[in-house]
Length: 161
Image (cartoon, rainbow, N blue to C red; front, side):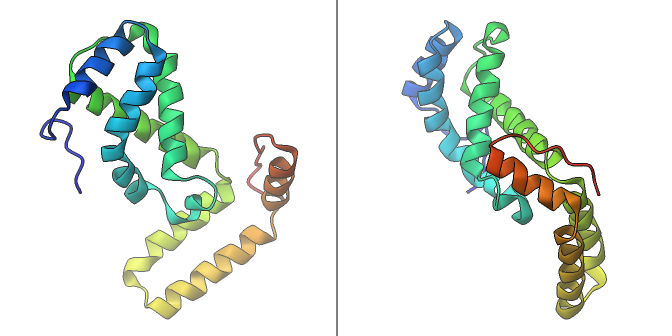
């Protein structure tokens, strides 16, 4: 299933919900995102890195997108469903980028190194590399910080060590 904001059929109910959201009805946004977000979830799931899925799901990214849309409601203009779908897509990408940026810098760097080495590696070589990268992450202060933050229900403060 491909998400194409300009070619997907437009539900008349979505048009009405968009109009109501533009007029200030926040509940209409939630219902609109449920309808339109169903098209976006598979796209987010494909874009969500496997290492991040243990912490954040596609539905979490979509919920953060709703919150972000509510934050910009005052500047929102109803330009039709295709434009809303494109906005939803961009804001979901930003929410995903934020989730990646909030992850441990060590884990992000390890993932980048593993991805960079994978095209020229055999499966065994890649599995060995990923095991070494994971071992380094498990020995880090960032792991302890992440566990403490989860236990204390706060955002982690990673140092990259």
